[in-house]
Image 1: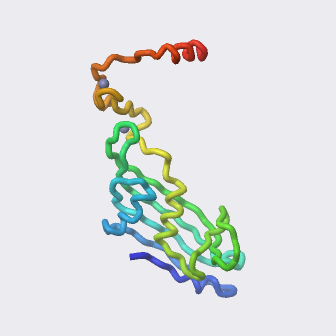
Image 2 (image 1 turned 135 degrees about the vertical axis):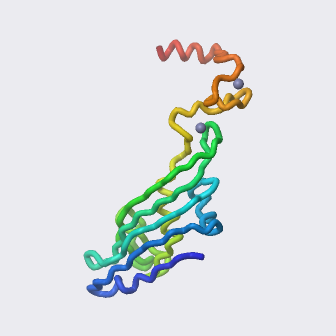
Image 3 (image 1 turned 90 degrees about the vertical axis):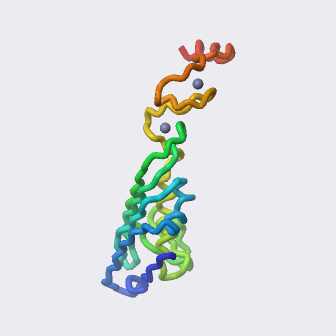
Length: 173
Ligand SMILES: [Zn+2]
Ligand SMILES: [Zn+2]
């Protein structure tokens, strides 16, 4: 299911209407549609709150999107919970208005209609980190034996220095 909002009532000249946005996405199948953009193993819930009204003669949207999900740690592969919250505000323009997608404008694909699923995907994607960590201090896995070093050291020999790197070490002293 995709959510769409008709914003005709705030496009009209001197419109005073306010459209509330308040969706909570909890269905597993629907949530799965956002897994790729979040790079999540599993999504628990996505919320979008906000409103659309006319500002300076143009439709204007204020939004807050929150996603709660499980993602794999880039170092130890442990699945840990994460939350991403995105807040913002934009003017809304239709494609025909020839506005560049920018910090000020959200350009809708269909004139007068906001597809909330696309909207959520677009703004969440901007906040997704390059990698998830279970904690900043995560020690990761031993590259040799694969042991999770957060649970303690393994018995692999430590730091066999490649002579080429030893020279670099001296250089950086
Ligand atoms: Zn980790
Ligand atoms: Zn090891």
